[in-house]
Amino acid sequence: MRDGSGQEWRRGWHLVMLTALGLICAPTTVAPYTIGLFVAPLQDSFGWSRAAIQGAILFSTGLGLAGGPVAGWLVQRLGLRLAILSGVVGIASAIASAAAITGALWQLYLAYALIALLGAGTSAVTWSFLIAERFSASRGLALGLALSGTGLSAILAPRLAAIGMDLGGWRAAYLALAAFPLLIVLPACLLLLPRREASQQVAAMASDGPATPGVPLAQALRGRHFWMMGASTAAIYLAIGGLITNLVPALTDKGVSRADAVTIMGILGAAIIAGRIGVGALIDRLWAPAVAAAILLPASAACLFLATADMGFTGYALAAALLGIATGMEFDMLAFLAARYFGLADYPRIYGRLYMFVAGAAGGAPLGFGALYDHMHSYGIAFILSACLLAGGAAGLLALGRYPVSPRGAA
Image (cartoon, rainbow, N blue to C red; front, top):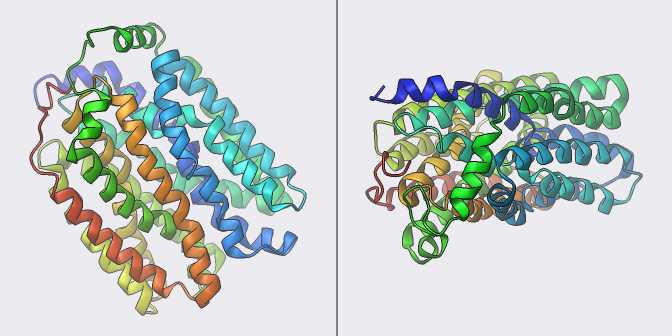
């Protein structure tokens, strides 16, 4: 590690661990990683189509179009501590409300919309700023470890939902998912989130002369880096967002048992964690867009194999691992690039706007994939489309060019 990283880790290791825990139940993790398990039970209970059920993700992840800027606003106005605490309580309440659905599709959509809006304070915008502000020399590794919570979510959230479903059906599954943030994450946040530093950050960001270097939001919006970063990220998330939420039904359609499909989702989750940590360590030393391309192109090939081959459990597990590594680089890569290209002076608002690309793409993808299935009765075209999107996202990130902000200057 470079000089200064040891001091950073002594000062902030507990916040890295807290972020990983908190992201297990963030709006962009718990909803898409578990919706596949609810497809069949909700179809059986209410007769809704797969596209209609998957459309709920348009409201949870998709409403990040508003949730990202809301999260940036909360950080600036309330500080990180209050923003995160309000989000943890909000997302628990929203998930629990899904257990009260009585048969109207709008009730499902409302519950998932509340996940995004009430849980905005637990989004990657708040958690990544908590880490990026405290780490400079080893920011990539710190973000990778912290944001590996999304991989933990892919492992734990489906299993928690499955346990609830086995005990009491899909309503119990929603209540089990709601209990985790309330009983586990909230006490940890109350204990570990900084108190005084949050108010100092708010004061610094509100002052006329920001204490940290970087460009303001208006300047970032006028530059090509913001839009290229956003478009490339949207392409990646269109692919990843559609794949993750439809992977379980796609595998079961190919004859994979539900238990094996959940296991494959666990492999994907483990690969997400490995991708987060490995990519995080690499981007501290290598040009991040090149690292991204090296990860995205094999994932693109995996999509083509899923579309055209019957690979058996081992083949599906390998494809899921490649997709998991690609999924594992998305949040920390975007957070790292935002800090390197724009600095930290206006980071919450800039990242909040970039998050709108993530939310729009990841929110619309499940609905689009579900509609393709309903029309063609196959996920083949969707997997081929994902392969093209991942390759296009890699090309867009490579076009960003050299970093305009030094790692130390961006801190």
